Image (cartoon, rainbow, N blue to C red):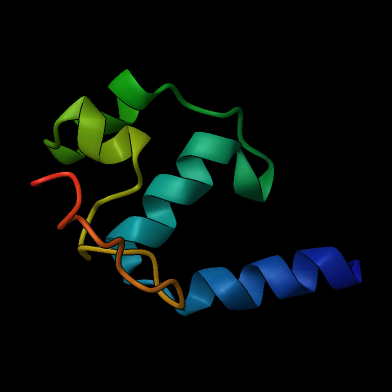
Length: 74
């Protein structure tokens, strides 16, 4: 296993199970063919936008500060 693969696997291990599975399926990790956003959304009963944005279980990406939405009114 390369250093890159090791780092990727450790990073994925930090995610909740469903997020880890979605990312693994989307990008073909573990040697499988990558799945489409539509396929993954159907499999987990999610909206395609949630899968496409990797917004499965958390409101933001871990380690990244939340965006300031006050200027946009959102």
